[in-house]
Amino acid sequence: MNDQRQPRTDVVTSYKDAPTRTVTAGGVVYAYRELGPKAGVPVVFLHHLAAVLDNWDPRVVDGIAAEHRVITFDNRGVGASTGSTPKTIQAMAKDAVTFIRAMGLTRVDLLGFSMGGMIAQVIAQDEPELVRKMIIAGTGPAGGEGIENVTLLSHLDTVRGLFTLQDPKQFLFFTRTANGRRAGKEFLARLKERTGNRDKAISLKAYFTQLKAIHQWGLAQPQDLSVIRQPVLVANGDNDRMVPTKNTVDLSNRLPNSELVIYPDAGHGGIFQFHGQFVEKALEFLKR
Image 1 (cartoon, rainbow, N blue to C red):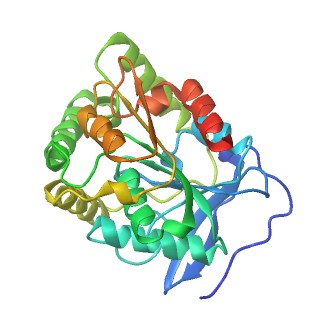
Image 2 (image 1 turned 135 degrees about the horizontal axis):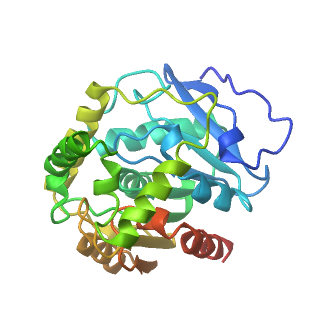
Image 3 (image 1 turned 90 degrees about the horizontal axis):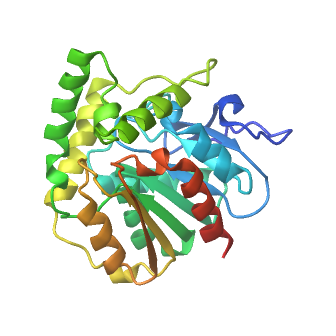
């Protein structure tokens, strides 16, 4: 492992000001950002489909980082990280573990959104000693109902976005009610708050590879989630089109030590629409 981490000389409190750093492991240069206190168990964020460092809601990152060290990173082949994008969720999980260990970490909390929640489940099963607690949102179990439709929905809403000159996340993450439309516009505006040193966008090749991995996850045989003994906070909106909300309820029922939060009049991006309530709940969960 070639460790290229630069020493942190001060505590960064705002995600829009967090410098992008790199660490090299297994022949891959991983791009990451970190902020918050230097002590305690860090919270490692795991990306959604097509996301790079700039796609995390700064209100969620800053909210968690007010009390915890937060680390976000680009997985292999995504954004500013090198290498080729893994073809399966399981391989993405192995890369995440490689990154976590390259950071010198032996115990972490995981916050996984959508595809990141799928990756988190695999990490908890494969490396149980590494994970203290998990927060997974807008996600579902392997073989979950409707997950195989993510590819079709993503294509349709990308075209919809092009025709209406809107970001596809407005349709994919939020409801079409007045509350959902407003929340979507506010979320997309927050993603633009960082103006300098922005991340490289995901390539089309990497995006399509991720879609195939999610499709394969949706068609996979259900897993025995009773082996995940860690405390898990499971969250979603009540009207998730991408990963139907029934999967979130199913996840919570199958995890032996879970707590479920469903946000009203909200879609896939419920934790971003209700970022204030979500951060408060997440901090309380992590503190227990």
